[in-house]
Length: 445
Ligand SMILES: [Zn+2]
Ligand SMILES: [Zn+2]
Image 1: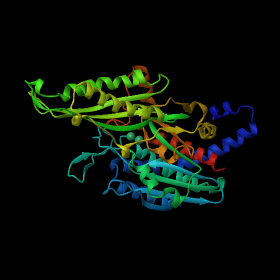
Image 2: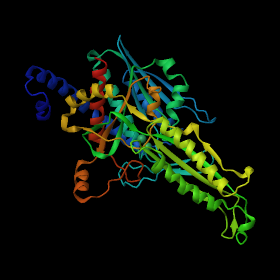
Image 3: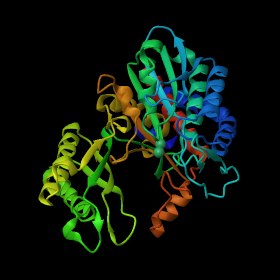
Image 4: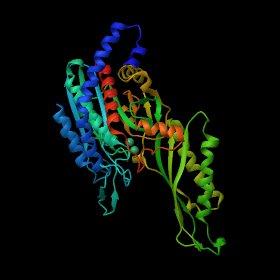
């Protein structure tokens, strides 16, 4: 309470009202916490991979229905045949007012959990092709689902304190960044209403539990997947004069690609060009016919992204020409359009509106301004290219004692997607619910 006092010092009447409101919210969240923790541990022990979120979506749907929402399941249409949409949409209509969408994702990752927690996952999933994969909630989407259920329960119980329409969604396939577009393709906004704002939270590996972080403006980067098939003319390793070596050409391309960011992109724009895989050849004395490169490209601005895509194509073709590659053996450059994530641009006005509400709820010391990162998410899709303001904030997930220890020793904490990532669920979920409810009440007042 002392922190809240310091922010609103002097406004004693306002302070009393704020304290009463915050205390009511504290109590409502505290009441739900044991049940949310139990749900979290169940979800954590039973993670499901992207596109296969059958049980997870059923759990979320049942919980939101029990909280009083009108729930539709199976929302989502993928372009790849064979995948079923496991999206959940829960609506609570509470009279005239704005429409707010709050999103959680549902999916887990092919990671073998090594946290040693009593509720650790030992799940192995058999892919349709027969391949077996370990599965773990290594990104904390189980934290998001539990927080969404808590938010639903608290807002449903506080129906007299807000008005408008709440649309809560469980989005599948975030990790493969095709779930948000699948839900939109299935008529999310046409069927359930177009929101005036959309909010989401993500747990964070670099912030202690109990705190949240806001990043107004660009917060997460665009992500583009690109393949280059460097073709050559194969032959005997002892007779390079009879061949056109794609291994040497691929090596030149990999190095030349590094000059795009260093020499072509303005130092004031952020960009990353990573060649993540390089595969070619079968035996040391054979010059192969081709080498395959898999690239990942990150930017904030669309114009910078377009520039880089064109440069990759230009460099690959130009170096092939310089190597004297025949016209019919030029490189094939492909952009995977269905694996594209737009940048997450946290609307500055919406950020400025919810920040004071979250500060009132958690205290100024517990609300940080965090720098953007080059990671990617498909939550930005729900903003329809800037037509709907969206904000995703980050919720600290690290045990504060471990965080302090790491600060002291310089130890590196396990990041999201690591087999050792272990959020401290109690305070993380509690903080997530309190921050999200505070933001929702501000937008629906
Ligand atoms: Zn992730
Ligand atoms: Zn995630």
